[in-house]
Length: 389
Ligand code: NZQ
Ligand code: ZN
Image (tube, rainbow, N blue to C red):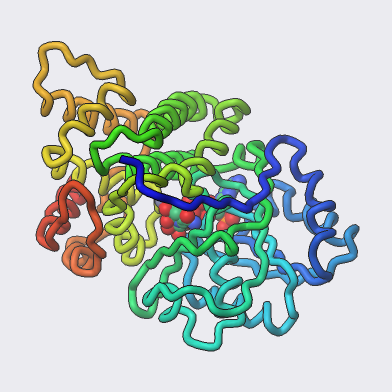
């Protein structure tokens, strides 16, 4: 049965090769002071930084820069940005980069005028927002997280070794996002395929839950097929515009959070990965890939019919002559082969984990899950399997 839901997505998307042309008219809707938030060097290397600065100057905006936003953005960086916002009375935070930059911008937007401890209030206690939120907009350079069209903000607090994510209400979504697939051409293959697994994981987290006949599951199957097809093309030819644009739009659709509506969801893979990330600082999508295979192989019996459906609908596994368990496992084998074909890393050691970290990661993992609730010991078993994969 479809669960009740309320869906609102206020983000305006400008998609395509000329989408940066829309920036001037969008900026006219905001005050004079714009914070340009970005990562380390990539936007300068591709010339996007200069283009954006020119547009901001032509629009007579005061520019406040926040650079150096790191992958897995830290709470320390959020505090730095929040101070800058208050000091300069920033009217709009323009995030230019991947999910980390956009997530950090949203965190700054809610933290800047929070009079309590923002970390405790918003990322630990998950309290509703009760202060002014600074508007955020984005120019996306990495397809994967969906942060460009959602309220998600995942922040790592290094002091307490916790990576915590939260989907804020739609008022925190970027007001507009500019999506030009050509900006992703410069991504190293490692980052491109990490983003690809991330978008797939968002869909699988929603899919592997319940047995009802809901529209959302059919949408997920279609999106997964499109991503798998485009990923194979993009791995061969990273400058294939059609494949890169399919991936970019699929990522936004996968986690906006349209694909999770109307049904229960799982999210255990993300919960484990967040703590893997807190300890190793690995690329998010790679951490997800490492955890997914041992996790799904551990729980598939509890959701057997859905894993069978996944194998048939997404991976075209033949049913004839196989038991349900064999079909389900063949689907998971196909997922593993896909990771190999794309060069996605599934070994936790390779991602920077040490044996000593594994129990700490297991103990600090939040348990969600759907078909099966894991114990801490089972999380540890999954981590150990991923460590030797
Ligand atoms: O720092 P720069 O120089 O910009 O380099 C970045 C960074 O090193 C580079 N990059 C980005 N665009 C590029 C580029 N390099 C060359 N050319 C380009 N066009 O890529 C590296 C990784 O960037 P990052 O933003 O960290 O990657 P991603 O988009 O995968 O974001 C990951 C973060 O988002 C969170 C993850 O946990 C992680 O912290 N997530 C956010 C979600 C959300 N908002 O809904 C949901 C996700 O599940 C996820 O948890
Ligand atoms: Zn993710």
